[in-house]
Amino acid sequence: MHQKQRKLETKDLHHYKSLVGKLPLLKKEIAKVIVGQEAAIDEILISLLAGGHCLLEGVPGLAKTLMVKTISEALDMKFKRIQFTPDLMPGDILGTEILEEDHETGKKFFKFNRGPIFANIVLADEINRTPPKTQAALLEAMQEYKVTYAGTNYDLPKPFLIIATQNPIEQAGTYPLPEAQLDRFLLYIKLGYPSESEELNVLKNTTGTSKPTLNSIMSDAEIIDLQHLTRQVHISEELIVKINKIVRSTRPANTTSAFVKEWSEWGAGPRAGQALVVCAKARAVLNERFSVIPEDIEALTYPILRHRIALNFRAEAAGISTDDVITDLLK
Image (cartoon, rainbow, N blue to C red):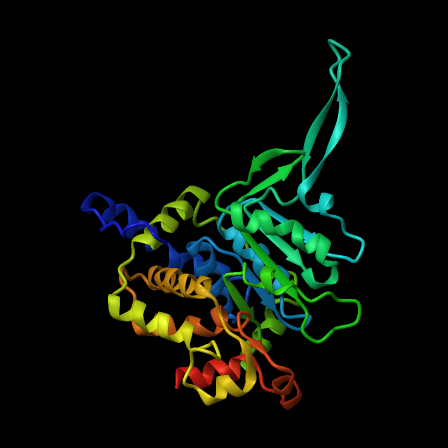
């Protein structure tokens, strides 16, 4: 984020334009399987282009797992799904050392057996069903894009995206994510029910014998190129100032909003501003633009801030949500 923004070179433009032109085809391919949920799919792709991770929340039956698997197939990326359970251990995610023997010399040695975290897209299914000790196993991978085991660093494949899911209605036997880990997620995406027409299409298209064939639209190398492009997208000084004001206004000590002062315990940190800048750039790329517009910021303020604002006990008792706080700020 501190590197000077490099202006797009003419020799790069043709290559980048051809890659950006594939993004509508990618969304069309995903739509063969996933009916509706365009906003959630866009936000997952924005997270991928921005080089971050996302938390996906929705009630059972909204095709969260199918959505992530479909995106990975359309991108021709290695996909792994980890089912988080109360007895899951960090080694089940990261991998473990096994004792092997060299058949020629007879010497024994330890070999690191890589876990399911070593994939391009990792689905951490129902992440809040496992204790914090195991949840924390993802922290280094999410921040540093590597795994450290027995003092040795192992680089993760690139691009690398963790999509964690959680069920908002079931609280028995769950472990809420610590605030420090929540902040590592670039976006907090909420899935809603489909519209009546979308749900009708789901019933028609998924209860027969036909199964759509997915084509791979983009490779991992092309996604890495698009990630490089995302960082070069232009954003004006005026919009950066606007983002800074939005983030700072979430903090009770810095804000002029009576609503925030009344209901918030503490607000978003500087990482939220960084996330909003990079994700706004990624949304511009997804919409085939090389410059950020105010609409990019407004569309992403909710998924970027909703998990970075802590409400007080009175807000919870009154049924006030972080989305209500963000709505007041955007007014």
